[in-house]
Length: 546
Image (cartoon, rainbow, N blue to C red; front, side, top):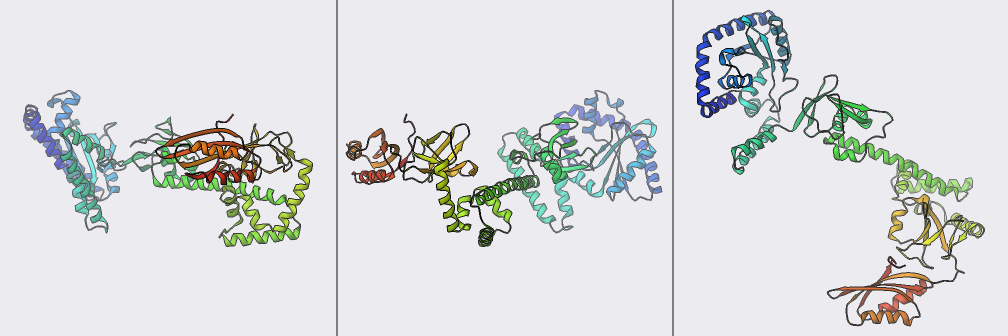
């Protein structure tokens, strides 16, 4: 534009005055001859455009000094050997007319291969748009021709900021847009003050100057615009949701690239998809840049997880209800209870209920307790106890497991269950069954996989001692540990291990003791709490005890 041309010429004048003056003098020598060529070309093009009934403005010029300076240095030639010094510019009213004029230009003069650029379809990062072509003009001299609309010309000549002001009032949001861009320009001025050198300022400006978008192509040549940093995943979802969901890879410029490849302007992107694809994963949310792609990925994952949880919840409920051997009348009663439960909890469909159960937000035992009448559950418990006597296995720890013949059974060390605790078994593949207290924090996590849970109860006739872990918090004092251990010993209970540590005035003591059952342990709890300075006693694990 005008500002750019003036800055470039002035910069050259001060940085390399000798070259500037040499080129200026050389231009003066050839000006008359070149201007005749320009006039001839202008008249010929004008006549051809008029025949096509198009109304345009044609501008002509010799290229500026700095532009010539670059050509001399790049091509390593003298001014006399340069031929493409003539330039015409055609200003049209519409984009369609730009391409129509391009066709007329190429019908008049032979275009130079490889010298056509379409910045209308693929704008520069600073929003510059124009058609550029080089043809063999009058006298066999190369001539550059630029074709653009009035609006594009205004941007090219005066910059995008001037164009915002030029456009002000033509749309409802133009004033807001103008103020946004002015705020950006003010930020640039602040950078200029903050950065130490002009070089740093220019480098920072290069990074930010309208560098928030990239323009890429489909294999068919369709132009697509994406935010900078976008990946093939963003491109795939821009094309269509199904293309994104079925994406298994990508080619950029005919080369296979990873899905986290960062797209660049001008890339030709081809998405490799497959109907058998398992769909997007959670990792895609980290890769995707556009909100649209991220939202579509989340929607797919929600739907995928929902379907898996629905199937899981349905299976759990069907299996649990089968255990009760319901009559037709009882089944109708349970169905009515389920419908009532769904209405009370705003579940619109049975699928919604299955999903909640499958997710573990509502355990199957909680749900059965709400929809299966007590009499039916009691009948089942009675029948199960009878069957348990026939099929149950009593482990060496005094735990009865129905249908678990041959499986190893052990007590969990994290919660140290003892007779009197409510318990539940968890099947660990290759390791047998581990018995946890129902209030064990680890069991809360494990109950999400309800298929591995087995009913367990204590054999009341089984007599043995069980290790129980205690955690005691107290205000530290001399002989505190002695008083606590004496209290336990006086109760006739063996101490298996002791570990204590203190910080400042606080003490924490870990005990593992041998007891018969929870009743005995509760009595010991009460006795320990009577010890001076003891603040709290609670159950703990027995990690580290061998």
